Image 1 (cartoon, rainbow, N blue to C red):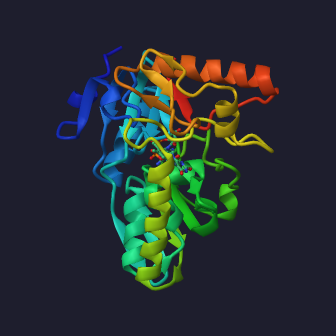
Image 2: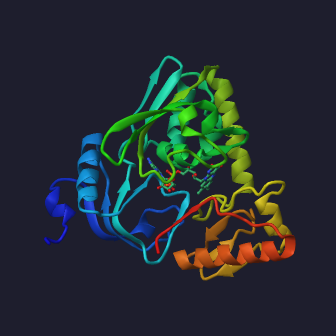
Length: 298
Ligand SMILES: Cc1cc2nc3c(=O)[nH]c(=O)nc-3n(C[C@H](O)[C@H](O)[C@H](O)COP(=O)(O)OP(=O)(O)OC[C@H]3O[C@@H](n4cnc5c(N)ncnc54)[C@H](O)[C@@H]3O)c2cc1C
């Protein structure tokens, strides 16, 4: 069998071989990917994914890589970053954004057009695709509240539109998870309001975020889901785990729900801190903490 060589197969496409993923993740950790591809449009995305599937090459689709930890072994097969697909357009009270657009920029465009409903997203460093996939949310708002529909590329290569209902949103859950479908765009249904009011709410959320979260260090945001009846951060704090560190990964001293990269952290350091926190919290409070972040790689 001929060896797969995506660079030779797709000349002129932005494809790199054997690159460290730590360069691209928000935590700044992660081993190498066999192949990384940044599609510039849907045609490129369809063409390369079709080829990869025919070659049985595993595919991992990422947005801003702000909600994941990639292990030291990295990812086999093809990693696709959608961050070049960034178009955002406004039509009456709806805003449609390509999956790679930053959700922060999308909220900003909505604000500039006097459209309210995305303020909660003003400080979330993810892409629109990642936000829909995770049903991201903050400060009482989430994707579920304002999404009208999302378009996905199915593993069979067809474009399919999901209504909000069909996406079956739950807490950090959407129906796309585990299907192999790639979210390519999302449309948000918003409501008119004066941009000065919208901007004020966004600023307030961002001020609150900056005062509570360790934004000065690389991280992946809140590591654990909120266990029913508790707050993950409070349990971790009460367990005395703030400052606990393995290698360069440390339970933040500013916000116990975050694990920050203090310098040279690796994916293994992160995984070790997560396991320790889970064990200690279980031992002390009999509560199981489930990671909200995705841990990818072997
Ligand atoms: C400082 C900080 C603060 C944060 N605050 C919040 C917060 O307040 N609320 C919150 O909900 N989250 C928060 N997060 C987490 C994160 O930003 C969100 O979950 C965000 O929505 C993830 O988007 P992303 O593009 O970075 O996704 P990625 O991390 O790239 O991917 C996350 C998952 O989604 C999948 N995915 C991504 N894009 C697609 C796509 N187009 N199609 C199919 N699958 C896809 C990936 O395969 C992966 O499994 C925070 C993170 C940081 C670092």
